[in-house]
Image (cartoon, rainbow, N blue to C red):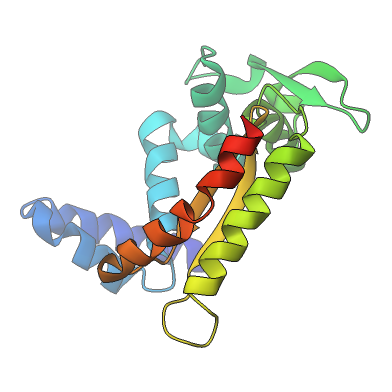
Length: 193
């Protein structure tokens, strides 16, 4: 089978590379060129946490999601028998149902994990904050027009009911232009307070 041949090649490559750990990444990239570094890291994390029979039984994707769920929730996982670990799986209406890991599909694991990652507050931003954020966005886009050099992106997000502005792509030598754009909006900020 192709998987066995790749696995055997990987085992030999790892054994050879163990003499020189700095070459391990190179060996992996040569022997397993069709796998991304992210995939290799996922496989490595699962292999480090679970035995091969457990990985065959539950699958690498589900076990990887379980490891991420464990980090997000601080639950205890029996690495020899993870199947009995209870996962809070949301249904279509958002109601949580505890299911044993062995009964969860990949989609259910993703939904459970997504639910745990959502912010505690879904309080909408006040209209004044959205208006002010738009004014800042407009001021920055005036200083950094599209098609004329730097591609500066300003986005607003809701972080637990507070408006947060994110600035991306500002060249270091043009930070003063960003400061000018933002300070031009200070009177608007005072009106908000």
